Length: 210
Image (cartoon, rainbow, N blue to C red; front, top):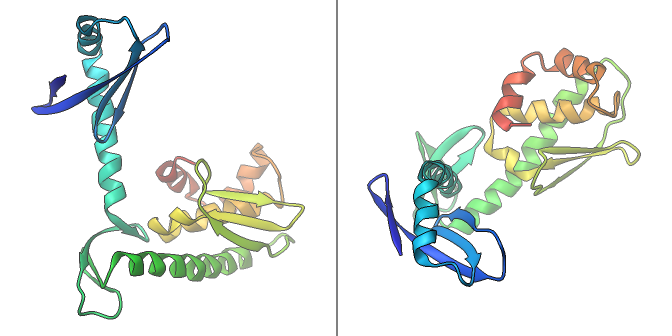
Protein backbone atom coordinates (compact mmCIF):
# COMPACT_ATOMS: atom_id res chain seq x y z
CA UNK A 1 0.00 0.00 0.00
CA UNK A 2 1.23 3.50 -0.86
CA UNK A 3 0.00 7.03 -0.33
CA UNK A 4 0.87 10.28 -2.11
CA UNK A 5 1.66 13.23 0.15
CA UNK A 6 3.18 16.51 -1.05
CA UNK A 7 3.80 15.03 -4.53
CA UNK A 8 5.77 12.09 -3.11
CA UNK A 9 4.78 8.47 -2.62
CA UNK A 10 5.26 6.83 0.78
CA UNK A 11 4.96 3.13 1.55
CA UNK A 12 2.44 2.05 4.19
CA UNK A 13 3.80 -0.72 6.43
CA UNK A 14 1.04 -2.53 8.32
CA UNK A 15 1.78 -4.49 11.47
CA UNK A 16 -1.14 -6.47 12.84
CA UNK A 17 -1.30 -7.32 16.52
CA UNK A 18 -3.86 -8.27 19.14
CA UNK A 19 -4.53 -4.68 20.18
CA UNK A 20 -7.74 -2.64 20.29
CA UNK A 21 -6.59 0.69 18.89
CA UNK A 22 -4.80 1.77 15.73
CA UNK A 23 -1.44 3.55 15.96
CA UNK A 24 0.50 5.51 13.37
CA UNK A 25 4.22 6.30 13.21
CA UNK A 26 6.33 8.01 10.59
CA UNK A 27 9.89 6.77 10.01
CA UNK A 28 12.47 7.76 7.38
CA UNK A 29 11.59 4.69 5.31
CA UNK A 30 7.82 5.08 5.38
CA UNK A 31 4.58 5.20 7.38
CA UNK A 32 3.89 2.46 9.90
CA UNK A 33 0.43 1.41 11.04
CA UNK A 34 -0.16 -0.92 13.98
CA UNK A 35 -3.67 -2.35 14.18
CA UNK A 36 -5.75 -5.36 15.11
CA UNK A 37 -5.50 -8.60 13.14
CA UNK A 38 -9.07 -8.19 11.87
CA UNK A 39 -8.84 -4.56 10.72
CA UNK A 40 -9.61 -4.39 6.96
CA UNK A 41 -7.44 -2.33 4.61
CA UNK A 42 -10.38 -0.01 3.84
CA UNK A 43 -10.51 1.15 7.47
CA UNK A 44 -6.74 1.61 7.55
CA UNK A 45 -6.91 3.72 4.39
CA UNK A 46 -9.74 5.81 5.85
CA UNK A 47 -7.73 6.28 9.07
CA UNK A 48 -4.75 7.54 7.06
CA UNK A 49 -6.86 9.92 4.98
CA UNK A 50 -8.45 11.42 8.12
CA UNK A 51 -5.02 12.08 9.59
CA UNK A 52 -3.32 13.28 6.40
CA UNK A 53 -2.48 16.75 7.78
CA UNK A 54 -0.85 15.30 10.90
CA UNK A 55 1.05 12.74 8.80
CA UNK A 56 2.32 15.50 6.52
CA UNK A 57 3.68 17.43 9.51
CA UNK A 58 5.31 14.28 10.92
CA UNK A 59 6.95 13.59 7.55
CA UNK A 60 8.39 17.10 7.36
CA UNK A 61 9.75 16.77 10.90
CA UNK A 62 11.24 13.33 10.20
CA UNK A 63 12.87 14.46 6.96
CA UNK A 64 14.31 17.57 8.61
CA UNK A 65 15.82 15.42 11.36
CA UNK A 66 17.23 12.99 8.80
CA UNK A 67 18.82 15.84 6.85
CA UNK A 68 20.33 17.26 10.03
CA UNK A 69 21.73 13.88 11.04
CA UNK A 70 23.33 13.47 7.62
CA UNK A 71 25.05 16.86 7.75
CA UNK A 72 28.20 17.67 9.65
CA UNK A 73 27.70 20.37 12.26
CA UNK A 74 30.64 21.94 14.09
CA UNK A 75 30.45 24.94 16.42
CA UNK A 76 27.15 26.17 15.03
CA UNK A 77 27.98 25.82 11.33
CA UNK A 78 26.76 23.22 8.84
CA UNK A 79 29.20 21.62 6.42
CA UNK A 80 28.97 19.26 3.48
CA UNK A 81 31.42 16.39 3.97
CA UNK A 82 33.83 15.69 1.10
CA UNK A 83 35.92 12.52 1.40
CA UNK A 84 39.33 12.74 -0.28
CA UNK A 85 41.90 9.98 0.00
CA UNK A 86 44.83 12.23 -0.81
CA UNK A 87 44.64 14.45 2.29
CA UNK A 88 46.15 13.58 5.66
CA UNK A 89 44.18 15.93 7.89
CA UNK A 90 40.82 17.61 8.12
CA UNK A 91 40.37 20.86 6.20
CA UNK A 92 37.54 23.41 6.35
CA UNK A 93 36.77 25.66 3.39
CA UNK A 94 33.62 27.79 3.29
CA UNK A 95 30.66 25.40 3.77
CA UNK A 96 32.63 22.20 3.14
CA UNK A 97 34.83 19.97 5.24
CA UNK A 98 37.41 17.77 3.52
CA UNK A 99 38.48 14.60 5.27
CA UNK A 100 40.23 11.34 4.32
CA UNK A 101 37.45 9.15 5.77
CA UNK A 102 34.38 9.39 8.01
CA UNK A 103 36.02 7.59 10.95
CA UNK A 104 38.68 10.31 11.01
CA UNK A 105 35.86 12.86 11.16
CA UNK A 106 34.47 11.16 14.28
CA UNK A 107 37.94 11.13 15.86
CA UNK A 108 38.28 14.84 15.12
CA UNK A 109 34.95 15.57 16.84
CA UNK A 110 35.86 13.56 19.95
CA UNK A 111 39.18 15.40 20.25
CA UNK A 112 37.45 18.74 19.78
CA UNK A 113 34.88 17.91 22.44
CA UNK A 114 37.66 17.32 24.96
CA UNK A 115 39.66 20.39 23.92
CA UNK A 116 36.85 22.93 23.56
CA UNK A 117 34.68 21.80 26.47
CA UNK A 118 37.65 21.91 28.85
CA UNK A 119 38.70 25.33 27.54
CA UNK A 120 35.20 26.76 27.91
CA UNK A 121 34.79 25.26 31.38
CA UNK A 122 37.88 27.15 32.54
CA UNK A 123 36.66 30.37 30.93
CA UNK A 124 33.16 30.10 32.40
CA UNK A 125 34.39 29.03 35.84
CA UNK A 126 36.73 32.03 36.08
CA UNK A 127 33.91 34.56 35.65
CA UNK A 128 32.11 33.35 38.80
CA UNK A 129 32.43 35.69 41.75
CA UNK A 130 30.90 33.17 44.14
CA UNK A 131 32.95 30.36 45.64
CA UNK A 132 32.22 27.12 43.80
CA UNK A 133 34.37 24.02 43.29
CA UNK A 134 36.15 23.51 40.00
CA UNK A 135 34.35 20.40 38.77
CA UNK A 136 35.59 17.28 37.11
CA UNK A 137 34.32 17.21 33.52
CA UNK A 138 32.71 14.19 31.90
CA UNK A 139 31.64 14.08 28.25
CA UNK A 140 29.19 11.61 26.77
CA UNK A 141 25.96 11.06 24.91
CA UNK A 142 22.71 11.91 26.69
CA UNK A 143 19.24 11.46 25.23
CA UNK A 144 17.29 14.12 27.10
CA UNK A 145 19.84 16.49 28.64
CA UNK A 146 22.54 18.83 27.43
CA UNK A 147 24.24 18.87 30.79
CA UNK A 148 24.22 17.31 34.24
CA UNK A 149 25.59 18.40 37.60
CA UNK A 150 26.51 16.09 40.47
CA UNK A 151 27.01 18.44 43.38
CA UNK A 152 28.21 15.83 45.89
CA UNK A 153 30.83 14.41 43.53
CA UNK A 154 31.78 17.88 42.27
CA UNK A 155 31.41 17.03 38.61
CA UNK A 156 29.46 18.10 35.57
CA UNK A 157 28.71 16.11 32.44
CA UNK A 158 28.22 17.65 29.01
CA UNK A 159 26.38 16.10 26.09
CA UNK A 160 28.92 15.30 23.36
CA UNK A 161 26.50 16.66 20.72
CA UNK A 162 27.04 20.17 22.08
CA UNK A 163 30.06 20.35 19.76
CA UNK A 164 27.53 20.85 16.96
CA UNK A 165 26.45 24.18 18.48
CA UNK A 166 27.94 27.63 18.76
CA UNK A 167 30.28 28.58 21.62
CA UNK A 168 27.42 30.69 23.07
CA UNK A 169 25.30 27.57 23.53
CA UNK A 170 28.21 25.57 24.94
CA UNK A 171 28.95 28.34 27.44
CA UNK A 172 25.29 28.57 28.43
CA UNK A 173 25.08 24.88 29.30
CA UNK A 174 28.33 25.05 31.28
CA UNK A 175 27.16 28.14 33.18
CA UNK A 176 23.79 26.48 33.76
CA UNK A 177 25.47 23.48 35.36
CA UNK A 178 27.95 25.57 37.36
CA UNK A 179 25.06 27.57 38.79
CA UNK A 180 23.70 24.34 40.26
CA UNK A 181 26.60 24.45 42.71
CA UNK A 182 24.94 27.63 44.05
CA UNK A 183 21.30 26.57 43.69
CA UNK A 184 20.61 22.86 43.17
CA UNK A 185 17.20 23.49 41.62
CA UNK A 186 15.55 25.69 38.99
CA UNK A 187 14.19 28.31 41.37
CA UNK A 188 13.98 32.02 40.47
CA UNK A 189 17.21 32.50 42.41
CA UNK A 190 18.92 29.91 40.23
CA UNK A 191 17.92 31.76 37.06
CA UNK A 192 19.21 35.01 38.57
CA UNK A 193 22.64 33.43 38.75
CA UNK A 194 22.33 32.13 35.19
CA UNK A 195 21.33 35.57 33.90
CA UNK A 196 24.20 37.16 35.81
CA UNK A 197 26.78 35.13 33.88
CA UNK A 198 24.84 34.50 30.66
CA UNK A 199 22.67 37.62 30.14
CA UNK A 200 21.30 36.36 26.82
CA UNK A 201 20.76 32.82 28.06
CA UNK A 202 17.17 32.69 26.79
CA UNK A 203 18.37 32.76 23.18
CA UNK A 204 20.64 29.77 23.78
CA UNK A 205 17.96 28.06 25.82
CA UNK A 206 15.51 28.35 22.92
CA UNK A 207 18.05 27.06 20.39
CA UNK A 208 18.75 24.03 22.53
CA UNK A 209 15.16 23.66 23.75
CA UNK A 210 16.77 23.33 27.18
